[in-house]
Image 1 (cartoon, rainbow, N blue to C red):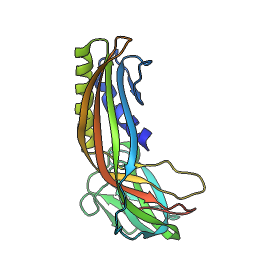
Image 2 (image 1 turned 180 degrees about the vertical axis):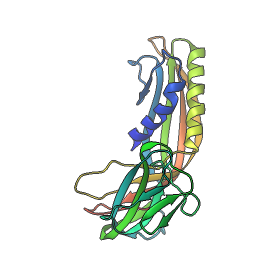
Image 3 (image 1 turned 30 degrees about the vertical axis):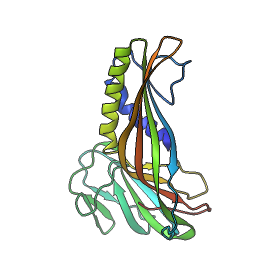
Length: 236
């Protein structure tokens, strides 16, 4: 999940960098070269407190995705999929508000505006039968670091400015982040409703002659933690 956030931001930052500058996932250390580094240092759950909300019952979940051609408005739900429609994302990771952007007509998802060309371009989640486990909502914070490194301080400053501006812009509309699926188990973790703030900006100079400029961002959000069971699910 944290790696996914790094990769998402790199796809935005990399095209904006000068041609000779590379971008990397993970922290910068003195044995690395120059470039821009995006590092999600960790995710920390906030304490439950003295009166935590009750866990909701767990249930199975079916996820289905469709390719979008940029013009099609209707997406038929396959006959083998049953259960209540929970939510729709178009493109995946970006919620499509039901009633405003999409509505359910019998077994067809109908959009008022065609989803953009992508494969997959539409994702829907369906609530299945009750299952072991629980659904829990937790607040959490992610520590995100941006490093810009060069042997010229002004260049490092400029690279960090570019990376920081793009990162803050993208975090305003960050997609829902989900942990990878594990075969044979339905354990789901999703991160959403992100708010971001700059925590610090630091400069450094190492023995190899590199100037390293680092910005640290704190991202607060609602985090949903799945059950520790063989079948569990969480909802937004």
